[in-house]
Amino acid sequence: MSGLPSLDPATLGAIPAAVRRPAYDRDALAVGMAHVGVGAFHRCHQGEFTDDLLGERFDRWGVVGINIREPHLADTLKPQDGLYTRLLREDDRVDARVIGCMVSTVDAQDDAGAALDVLASPDIEVVTLTVTEKGYCHKPASGLLDEANPDIAHDLANPAQPKSLPGILATALERRMQSHGRPVTLVSCDNIPSNGAILGGVVRAVAERRKAGLSAWIEANVAFPSTMVDRIVPATAEADRQMIEQTYGYRDRAPVVGEPFRQWVIENRFAGRVPQWDLAGATWADDVEPFELLKMRVLNAAQSALCYLGLFAGHEFTCDDMRDETLTAFVRRMLLEESVPTLPPVPGMAPGPYVEQTFSRLRNTAIRHRNHQIATDGSQKLVQRFINPIRERLGRNESVELLSLAVAGWIVYLAFASKRFGRRWTVEDPYSDRVAAIADRVGKDGAALAAEVLSDDRLFARELFENAGFKATIARHLDG
Ligand code: CS2
Image (cartoon, rainbow, N blue to C red; front, side, top):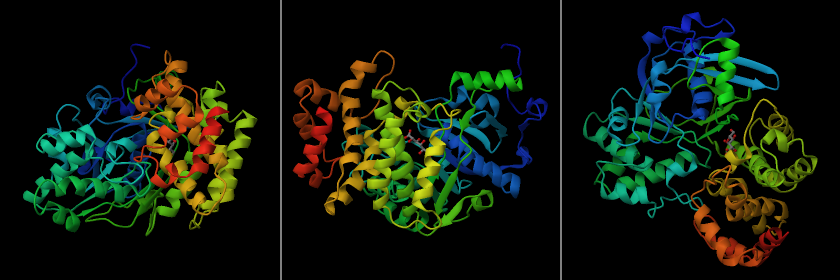
């Protein structure tokens, strides 16, 4: 629909009252925070929490959005001065709101210079990050820096022009140490277990190879709290942009659509000033791990199991999988019989009701979460969703029959999906070439496929590879 006004500060006053607007003076915001990885999830999660905080108790936290990978913010948020529409949808209900906390944007896809300037600035006291699991350049099985990662190898050789997230952060921290020395908190909001510890580990690992004293300075001046983040936010579709045009009469290049549910549990460990996100509903915790385990082993495990099995059954979205009673019965059994018994007690949350709440979230028909999107980068998601609970159960001689089926689903997806779905969808996973090459060599021989795939110790701990029973279970599922 041409001729419609585009969302920007000049048109904000004219958008319909059905769309809530920032309840504070945007011009009075001062930059205090940066976010790296301005994707849909950030805009619909931390962006909303910060906006709530600004509306609740005005504070100085204006956010600079930084992208070090696609998309270019110059094409999306910059022309809108950081404004975007956030839709919460549940079946036929919609809540629309414009979020205003992002005051400027930086693209650093080709040259980290502009990102380094922001991250090293004394004004920045908090940096939140959503760079996806693989952005940490760690080995999922151990959580340690993967020095074989080509971007890490590049950054160790070229510290002034870093490309990877750990390299960019190490260089920015080095600049902070050498100039003003002010502390900073780096808040990982990605879906990996102990995300703060992993982030701190990969940044320190690069720093140690960089410059004497940098690692010790980081130890004393930089905090890496862990967080558990939760809200289902699929990639924005053209239909979402059209819906805004048709329903509200304006154009938005960067809207986001999420479910109403949201949760953010943040480890109480900051260096310097702390945004009062608790005023917006976030929870401070001394230990985030029990919350992470519950979320990853229940909600995320259900999503991943459904995505593989759903794809093979010919379904497109999670909400389609949820109408397939064979699939939901399998996932319910997997969660209740194998995942939930591995969980420690979680303060204020009971696993049984959490499983039921998970099922009702996944049934939301307004959330068009593609199975292929959830399957993307599956290798980076397997350890926390399936492999860790499998290891714990095997250690106690307990059955892993159902969790193993999900792992086999990942193998089949990488081994054969490019042939099956290739024309409509590119399989994206750092391990896809490797697994597809194994499949080309061994064909559909489940035992050979299992033995070769499980031999990769970046994903599968040695004890799993050496466990004949586990290998046989995976092989049986692959042959099934
Ligand atoms: C999903 C997550 O694509 C995926 O890996 O499982 O993005 C999931 O929707 C979020 O973790 C929910 O908080």
